[in-house]
Length: 144
Image 1 (cartoon, rainbow, N blue to C red):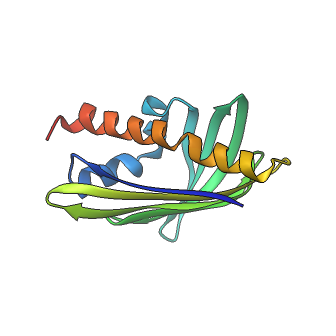
Image 2: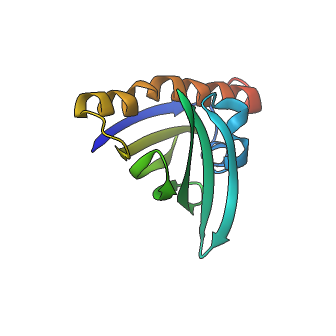
C-alpha cells in the first residue's frame, strides 16, 4: 500500500478552509483531474460521494466522507474501478487565524502497480493538489 502525507499553512480561517474541503461538488472547479463529483447519499453523519477523475483515462470511485465540522474530513473507499483501498483525511487546526491543514492518503490500486510506482502516483500529485487548494483559498478569501 502506498501513502503520502503533507501539512501546509493556508491564509484563511479553519471554518473557511473546511467549507472548501467539504464542498465536494465544487472540486471540478479547481482540481483539474476531477471531472465530476457528486453526493450520492447522506446518512448517519457521513456522505457517499462519487468522483470521476482523469488519470490517463476516466475512472470512477465512491468514498464515504465523515465530517467533523471545522476539524476533520476523513474518507474510506466504498467502491470503484481505480482503487482497492483509498483511505485518508484532512485534519485542520487554527494557527494564528490561519489554517494548518494536514492531508493524509493511503491507497492500493485495483490493477497491478509496482510499489515504487504506486508511491509515486499517490505522492507526485500532492504538490499540484495543494497548490490548487492555495489558489482556491486566494480566489474565495483573498490574501491574508
